[in-house]
Length: 160
Image 1 (cartoon, helix red, strand yellow):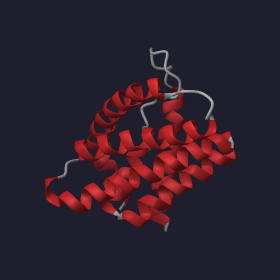
Image 2: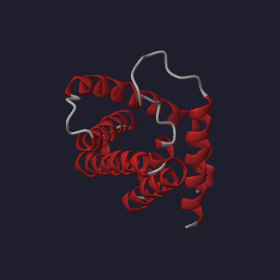
Image 3: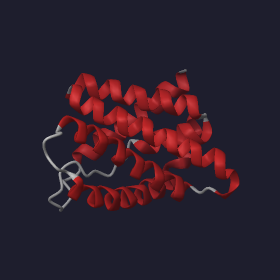
Image 4: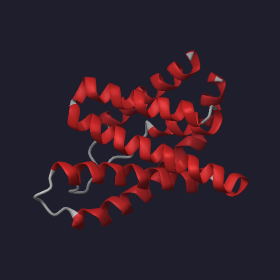
C-alpha cells in the first residue's frame, strides 16, 4: 500500500510538471503528453493489474477533487480503459509486448475513453472529425510516455 501511495505521489508530481509546461503549439483542446501515465504503466508492469487499476481510479478521484465531475469522468474513462487494454495486451502477448507498443495502446485507449465520455456529454454536436486527431496524438503521446518511462525507470525501480 505504501508503494502504491509513493507511485500515486509520483503520478501527481508528473501531472504537476506537465501543467507547468507551455501548451502544445497545436490548436486542439485536451491534447497533452500524459506524463502521469508513466506511473500507471510502472504499476502495471511491476506491481500488477489490480494496482494499476487502483492507481487510475485514484487519479480520477484526485481530478474530481481538483477539477470537477466532468474532468474526473474523462480521467476515469480514459484511465480505466487504458489499463484494461494494456493489461489485455500484456496477458495476450506476454514476452512479445514492448513498453512502446503497450504505451501506444494505452494512450490511444485513454483518448478513446475520453472521446466516448465527451460524445455522451455533447450528444447534439458531431465530434467525429476530432477522432483522427485524438488517435494521432495518442500514438505520439504513447511514444513519448514509453521513452520517458525508459529514462525514469531506474528511479522508479528504487521505490520498489
